[in-house]
Image (cartoon, rainbow, N blue to C red; front, top):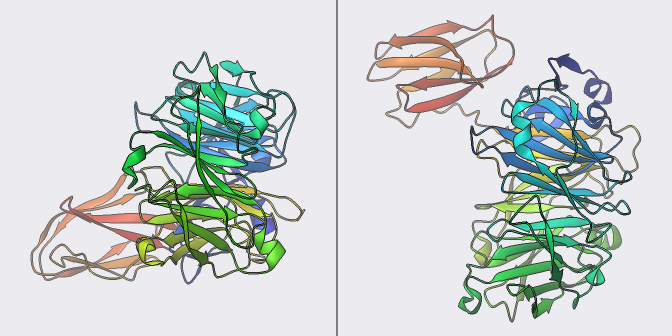
Length: 478
């Protein structure tokens, strides 16, 4: 695997190692998988770095282009992933001071906010709209503004609906959240902090819209504070109020968690419990229906003993960066009945699924396209090459379209040809196109017939077949 990952191709600053590889038979090339295809991979060496860490994403509201913001040991790399098979490395914002294993980035109002545990780093502000007009990538960027109200910080939290950033794990307010008004991103202003509950390793801030009507519309902070989860009302920045706290069994290091979309449940990861206690990957689920009286309801246990790191919720899926087990997708649609079920995975560290810190550090699941961004860490295994993977949910299927059962593809995946079989009504507009929407062939077909389509000139990869602009089916060429 390592040799393959080093076989890079370079075309117009577009980097791709193992690209557009479908998950077939439980493998996407060398990667174990279930239900997710590899779009592309860029190693951290491309970014002039020796490690990667956290990440976030930005979608340009002007044209819908998608960008990966990749934390590396010596800065933040910016990658245009609009074409996920051919991502373009645009450049890097260097660290404000020194290199560090820990760096975090979040987005507000088309600006990136970057912190690090490097001494004296503070918070960098970068105007993401500059990525629209990069003339000669990769460029070395400069920060557009800087906040020095704190030095080092482990993480930065942003409530996009309120216009505040929160440095956590800083050298201020006992390591609790440090409030920064970023309503004018180029002029960040300190606005106090909350130090009553001590050090926060990570946190989430929401404008609350959950079942506890006592706090509707309030700005609520959830802190993962190394040995406890705390809840605070930080609406009034000059007078933040402690609400409650909750612990759990077998505490090792209360690391990071995320609300469900309805703000009823909070899913927590303890980073070191698998190492200390020897059980499989564990996520702890709390019921926050009553913020004054949170309840531990159940634990989710994964299929491997790998260490868990960052996890995020989107809809009914909890996306978990699970270090050596890669990333895992967990169905939480029945969380209210104490059920959570793994429904997919992509293992970027195929060697093993043991405890430890090599592998997937972060997953960003919020791109509308369905692109999933994975950033990975090399902590101890010198033979492992990490960086940035882009994956996307598979849709292989061999079933006919639901639209009047009009179209079936055989075989799927295909080799040098595939057969289109129409049933019942004719197809007036059948189109085969690539992942970028480029039309490769277009024709009409009569009903109750079949036709073999030659695709020997197409490279291996993912294509799509649509009928009458109403239904689309993925076709994999092996």
